[in-house]
Structure formats: C-alpha cells, structure tokens
Amino acid sequence: MKHKPNIGIIGAGMIVGIHLDAFFNTKGAKVLWLADVDKRVLAEKQKKYNVPNGSTDYRDILRDDNIDAVIVGAPPFEHFDAAVSAMRAGKGVLIEKPLVINRSQMNRLVKETAKHKNLVILECSARHTRLQPKFHFVKKILDNGDIGEVYHIHHNHLMRRTFIEYNPRGVCSLKKSLAGGGPFLDWGVYDLSFHLGLLNDRPKLAGIKRFARNGIKIFSSPKIKSDVEEHGAALMEFDTGLTYYYERGAGVHCEVPNETRIFGTKGSLRFSYTTWDSPEIEKFWVNKNRVEKRTVYKVDMSKHPGDDPALINHFLDCLARKAKPAMPVALAAKHLDILFRILGK
Image (cartoon, rainbow, N blue to C red):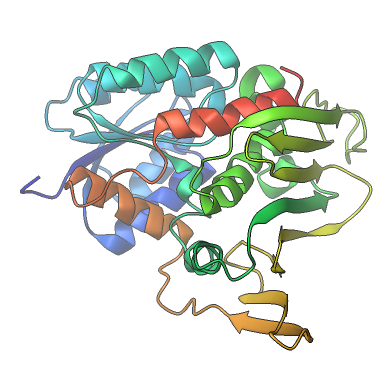
C-alpha cells in the first residue's frame, strides 16, 4: 500500500480501546469507522479517539470502498460472521481471539480463508507470544540445541478471579454460547501459540488425557451465572514423542503463577512468558566436567513497544507486504482444535 491504510473496527468494547490506543500511538493508519450495537459505548469511543464514522451495523464499514482492512473486536460469538463478511468484501482482517466459538465455525472459517489468498488475515494470539522478545530469546536457546532434545513441556497458571473481574462488562465471557469457553479459550490460545511456536509448530497431537470443571467459582453476587470451564488440565502426547502437561484455571480456589518449564536431554528452562512478568530465564544444565550449573539470563525488553502496539505494527507491516502473518487462521485453528479437545468438544 502506498498510503496509510484506512481501518474500520467492529466492536467498541475494552479490547478495542486497547487497539485504538495502539493506533493512536503508532500513527501508521487511519481509523475511519467504528461499529457497535451499544450506541452509548460507540459514542464514547468515537469521541475519545476522534473516529469520524460510527454505526450499529458493521456492514456499513464493509460497504465503504475506502476501507482497506478491518479489526474484528466484537465478542467471540460474532467473530465468524464478521470475519467472513469482511473477507468477502475484500478487506484485510485482524481477528480477535478466540478465533471462533465452536468446531463447525472453525472448519468453515479455515475453508473460507483459503479462498482469499490475496488478503492479509491475521489472528490475535501472536499478541503476547510470537511478537515479543522472550519468545525469540527462548526459541534461539532451543534452536541452538543448548538443552538438547525437548521431550517435555510443563505449563500451569491458576487464578481465583475470572474474566468478569477484569472486565465487569464482559458478562458474555461466562457463557459457552457467547464465548465458546473460559480460560482455555481466553488464555489457551496464547499458551499454545508460545509453546508450540518454539518447536516451529511441528508436533501434531496424537493423544490426550484431560479434565475440565465448572461450578467452582463463588461469585460476589448469586445473580452471576457461568457455564464455562473454570479449571482444567491435559496431558498431551505428540507424534514427535513430546509430552506436554498443561493446566489452566480462572475461578479456582488457588493461586499459581504463570510458569513454563521446558525439559531437554541436556538441560531445562524455567520462566514466565508474559511480558509483564520477570524478564529472567533460568537454565539448568551440566558442564563438560559434569558439574551441575544454573544460569539466569535477563531478556532485554527495553525496545519492545508493548504487546498490542507490536500486534498492530505487525498487522500494518503485513498489509504493506513487509511481513507475513505470524498467526494465520489455519495455524490458529490447529491450536483451537487442541483446546476444543481439552474441553471435550
């Protein structure tokens, strides 16, 4: 593109505010449209970010020939229809996570995306993962063979709070029919994006033992009801011989920090992959004299613009054909398929 791309955004909730902040700071595109069914929220966002056009019908954005690309930032149950409509209108698309809420939508979206190879279509789970320094630092250690062959990954993160405590307006996050799932669809897409990406997405799931439970969380109000999973875990086996123990919870009566352990035949790593946690990566290894050693690396995060600015910059680079999508729909669907299996779908 020779000009700054013109962007339309579907949805005006919390996550869209984060996207708008990123666009405002990068100044690499013009946001011309916002659409949301809530007129009040729509008006608030238009005024705050000086977006000239607004509508309660996102199709108005797609009818504008001046729009180059759209962000699908509406709640998950709207992702499929909005993304397909945008593709068919010839717009580039950035789709918020989770990609869709069920397997049928996932399969149909993958097929639809394949029909639009000329369009840039990016899914958002690259946000906290493949576009930040920790991912590339850890991947280099693995690629160099510093810990040998990776044979096991262990990751867990348990929280007492759920998404609704983080975003009180996000009541749809508690309904399967609207969100698709709980913490596994909220955070699982990031977990798999990071961990499987370290191994170049080669491993294919061969077997799984899993559980997922609901009805654990005691909400502050008895009027709040949830039917999404609140705690679950899986022991996964892959065709490469890799095993991966994975546990997530939001609404659990426990707190366990976000931590990843990667075990190799020559050593292991321990770290938290999120950018707001410690920048330290621990490596446990044995030197040539058979002495057990521990090395602590500190990842330089100083040049990282922030996870969402990095995502928006990457999307704009893709639109300008300077980069290829770090998370194409087919790959996002591979991860989502694993998460659906953990949830018993």
